[in-house]
Amino acid sequence: MLENGMTFEGTGFGDEHDVLCEVVFNSAMCGYTELLTDPSYAGQGVVMTYPLIGNYGVCYDDAESTKPWLRAFIVHSISGAASNFRCDVDLNTFLKQNGIPGIQGLDTRAITKILRESGTMRGMIAFGDSFDIPAMKKKLDAFTLKSCVPVVSSRESKVYGDGPVKIALVDYGVKSNIIRSLVKRGCTVKCFPYDASFEDLMSFSPDGVMLSNGPGDPKECVKAISELKKLYSYGIPTFAICLGHQLMALSQGFDTYKLKYGHRGINHPVKDLTTNRVYITSQNHGFVVNGETINPSVADIRFISMNDGSIEGLTYKNGKVFSVQFHPEASPGPLDSGFLFDEFMKLIGGSRI
View (spheres, rainbow, N blue to C red):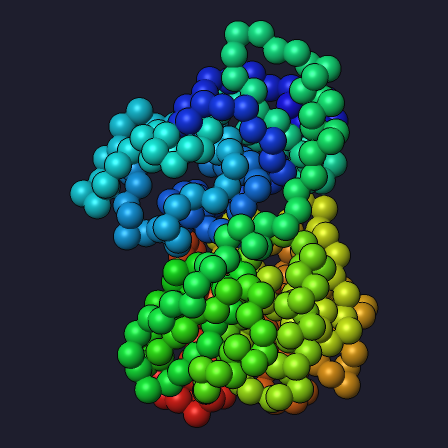
């Protein structure tokens, strides 16, 4: 059931239990393992527009974190067989093991059209032979999705790699490939919890700072915004992705707003205004920086979406900070914008490896 009262009936799979969620759609044809384990989907029920999901199973090496974070998986059809030499477990079993409910047999194209026209909605999946529709609607009306970052962020600092360049990474819900992208470029990466202070980060004596992706409304992260003001003033090289990009913008007095239905997929075209080149990017976000609030004396707009013109990246005038809304680490998706990690290395005086 969607919050507008529309209902769809299907067949359950995974761990069958009632769940409330924010319903969004993803247009990717593949990469569902990475999607399921992306912390940015915390609290959401994801509708896949591609009709058949699960045909190659789940490979643990493709996971972007230690477990799935979304609340529900909504598909037209789940494959009855998992056929791939890298497959560790079939999708249905993976979802059962991790307590994630799914529903199939729905007209996912119709649901996607509704979300595109009406915007992202709250939703509820209920299992059984009969349903109390008024009671479901009451639960939906009372549901709000809040404070996802504290749930997905690591509570303890962890270190990855042993390279000569030291990176302090703030974990708002980091994807593993961000860490891998830094480690393979010769970095020692120390991940800090989302509420780490500026002083905590500097105690590591880092050469640079990475601000990760994450779920939810950036304006909820009040403490993080305050600490990023100090970070910007300090002037250490900083690269911010997705939620980190939004938080850095908020720390400098810019505003953010929620998109009607967000950008979620692996084929979003983004234009680099400094070169006029277009890159195909992987994206997963519901909020963006409001371009009308950007102070030109503080930051320049570098990337824009070719689909709707929204802000996709900023370069700050202090010469030490840049940020992007999309995912240059991809996973899943194209590797077009992976060069941004090399730009980060050059900014902090490192070299590409």
